[in-house]
Amino acid sequence: MKSFASDNNSGVHPKVMQALIDANKEHVVAYGDDEYTGMAIRILKNYFGEQSDVFFVFNGTGANVIALQACVKSFHAVICAETAHINVDECGAPVRFTGCPLFPLSTVDGKLTPGLIRHKLHGFGDQHHSQPKVVYISQSTELGTLYTLDEIKAICDLAHEYDMYVHVDGARLANAAATMNVSLKNLTVDCGVDMLSFGGTKNGMMMGEAVVSFRKELTEYLHFYRKQSAQLFSKMRYLSAQFIAYFEDDLWLKNAGHANDMAKLLAGELHRIPGIRLTQKVETNALFLTMPLDLINKLRQHYFFYIWDEEINEIRLVTSFDTSEEDVRNFVNTVKSFI
Image (cartoon, rainbow, N blue to C red; front, side, top):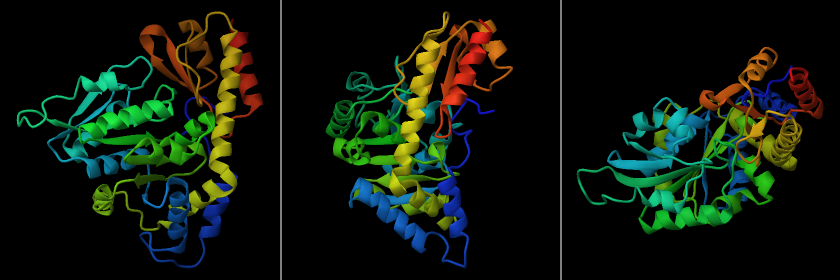
C-alpha cells in the first residue's frame, strides 16, 4: 500500500532506475570529470541559461547549506519564513555551516512578502547586529503554496535594493512549474533569483539535487563549499545520469504534473466529506487539512502520514509521481468507512 506521508517515500521512476543501470559500465573519471556529468550540466544550462553554474549534491539539506555558504559571511543573517525547511527540518545545519543566524518570520501561508521582510531590514553597518544578507524562499512552500512570478520579482527587487541575495529552495520547483505552466527559467533567473537548490529526489529520482548559481561572484568558491560540506560524490556519474533521464522527454514535468493532479483529485474528494476542512490552497502536491482526532487515529492504523499541527488536528498529505487514481479512491473510501 502506498502512503500519503511524503513524496520522499515514493520509489524511483523506472526510467531513472534504467539510467543508473546504463551508467554502471566500465570505468569513468571520478568527482564529476565524466561525460555523464558534463552532459547533465549542459542540460541544466539549457533550462536555466548559459550564465548558470551547476553543482550536483546528494540531498536537499546539503544543497541549501552549500548555497547559503556561498552567499554569506559569518556576521550575516538569513531571512526566511517560520515554516522554512532551513528553520524547521534541517537540525540547525544552515546555522552550523554558515555561522549565521536565521531571522524567521511568521506567515499564514508559508510565503514571505516585501512588507514582512522590511521588518528585518535594519541595523546595516552596525557592528552589534547581524547583517541581513539573504532572503530564503521555498517554491513551492512547505505549506504547498506558490509564489507568483510577480511576488518573486518583488522580493528580489527589494533584496537587491539592499545589496542582498535571494536563495530559492526548489525541492519542489518542478511541481510549481507544472501548476503555473511556466519554465524553470521563468521561475528563477527571469525573476532575479541569485541562487537555487533544485530538487529531484521528491519527483522520481533516487537521490540528487543541484545547486545552481546565477551570479558569478557566488560561484567562485562553490566547489570548495561542496567538498567541505561532504557533498562531493566521487562516483558522480550516478547522480548525473539521473538528471539526464529526469529531463529527457520532460519526465520531470510529467511526474510533477501527475502528482499535482492526484493532489487535486484527493482534495476534491476529501473536501466533500463532513468534518474535513482544507487549511491551505492545494496548488501543488501537498494537502493540509483538519479532521476529527478520532478519525485521524483510525486512519493512521491503515495509512502513514504526518500530523502537522496537533493543536488543531491538522494533517499533511502528499501525493507522488507514482500515486494512482486507485490509490486516491482507496484512501478516500477508507476515510468514508470511518464516518
